[in-house]
Amino acid sequence: MNDMTKFDRFVGLNETKISAQGVNVFYGDTHAVKDVSVEIAERAVTAFIGPSGCGKSTFLRCLNRMNDTIDGARVEGQIHLDGEDIYDPKVDPVQLRAKVGMVFQKPNPFPKSIYDNVAYGPRIHGLARNKADLDEIVEKSLRRAAIWDEVKDRLDAPGTGLSGGQQQRLCIARAVATEPEVLLMDEPCSALDPIATAQVEELIDELKRNVSVVIVTHSMQQAARVSQKTAFFHLGTLVEYGDTGQIFTNPKDPRTEAYITGRIG
Ligand SMILES: Nc1ncnc2c1ncn2[C@@H]1O[C@H](COP(=O)(O)OP(=O)(O)OP(=O)(O)O)[C@@H](O)[C@H]1O
Ligand SMILES: [Mg+2]
Image 1: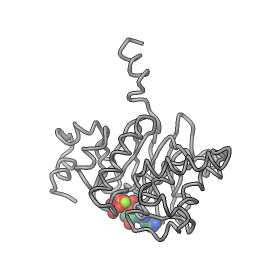
Image 2: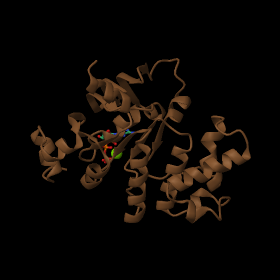
Image 3: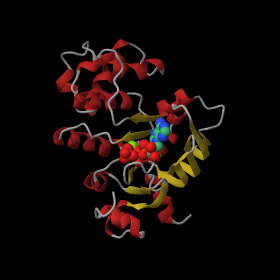
């Protein structure tokens, strides 16, 4: 091992967190994801981009087995997290999803109080020793999701009573409360105003110090701002994957170029 490799290992650059090999997903006869192989880097932000219907959400859901919950969805291929096969029958999908958290495009708070939405994960996974601990986790998570000031005086109010953008930030707080190692975010800012979007992007930037983040976005500007790696999908296939700078300034595939310059989409 030369010095450079040692340095890379030390700071965790380019280590693989999730490795997907030959992933195919079918919904009945629809072949939604076609032979996708990709290595998701540890402690970095990876953006998935591509036209509507190209399979970004479907592939994202493979990474924490959320497709297991969709009737008629069939996943083939191999996905390893830290070298372990996440589709091994020994793996408990609930445990897996605590490690590989998810934020959906449409906010989906539980029909519970704001406090209980965030406390839910830490409670079922035994992350708090007592009420004070739990209070601290709830506050920290709400702060990280940039919503604490708006809800701190009504933690007992139902999460579903918040505005769309607030609900989304609540869901982000819920997702970070279990300290996931990987966070999958499917168009997390599509319901947010520019101020909340900037705050969520700041959170993503902070998270990448110890979390691998995968974000699906339709905003090229957002992908360029927050990600280090970008994967471009088209018609179910992964067309191109590389450093974000390279993908946006010097794409190798004409389809990538057409998409980022707005000619397909
Ligand atoms: N639950 C489902 N049942 C049947 N077909 C589905 C289902 N979910 C997605 N599909 C199909 O799979 C393909 C990929 O869809 P997917 O939602 O992954 O695309 P996407 O890239 O996330 O699109 P968008 O940018 O619009 O969110 C599409 O053809 C879609 O119609
Ligand atoms: Mg989608």
